[in-house]
Image (tube, rainbow, N blue to C red; front, top):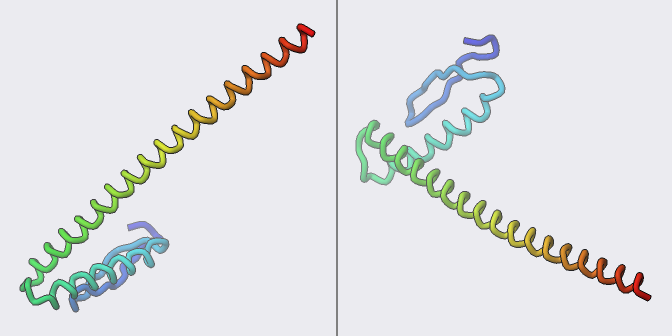
Length: 113
């Protein structure tokens, strides 16, 4: 245990757990535990699932499904942004190439006068 680590208490499904945590991660751990507790309470109160272990597994599966959907959507968005940036870069490069060609034509016309 590092010197910045100490146990903090979190409650999930009315049961208290002591979890070793570094000082800078305490608030994040508390938010995660609160989120988990809320989701597990929702599962418990739905009346469909009985037993703490089953509630925990179903809640974990639901949260994992949400996470994977978020990652997939984020990956799709990132890919779309990348494609848009590539198209814009190609348009910029084409415009710069045309501008360079016009400069060369102007220079040759000026020299020919």
